[in-house]
Length: 297
View 1 (cartoon, rainbow, N blue to C red):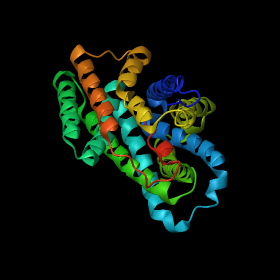
View 2: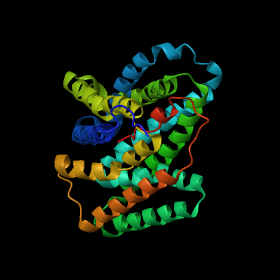
View 3: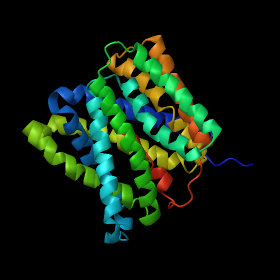
């Protein structure tokens, strides 16, 4: 079988996108003392929305107002997911936060697979989580709860992305959802941190986080999905916990114990296995796969 053009380099592109995503999250953590987690979410969603709305300008003309429930649910899931994830980063290491967060879509994949192999991946992930919880000394339970909430909302976000992909043209669904997320979070951020949010240095760094965490990964996904099978792409995306742990170590000096590292590896393996055995959804539009997470990290 003839491979698609550029297929050999596409996996490296996906891994580069994951790395950019986690570096963006690391920069956000460094900015928390100035604008807090909600401020960072607001800036990221605002700048991401401006980019996506510009890209999706043509397809926005075909949006039907009858789909407002889908759009509102999509935007709420995206905004709250980001807020909870960034709140978790304020309390627990990046690698652990992403690992816990990934359990949301992983659980959805296992439930939808309805196979014995799905149960195997669930048990593997469960052992990994047990390793995280049993040896991560001083792990903030509130931070864990925030990450778990982000994971649950990530699963909801996936379901909303499917609905939007099937009902709305082009990239209009993700563009409007991101804009709604910004509308919901920017007023809260301004009320909590005030004028600091609009200082030039903070805006510049917020733009950098949006580019690293959203624009570059999203552009890479668009490119990679034209060259890779959806299954291969999903497997690579399941490596996010491992990439996040490595980024946290290098950028934020967040060292992990060997047992916690093993837990992250087991959850990553479970994620790879789950996406390989997950059913293919053919009811969504051509851009539905592209609109499936970017992770909030």
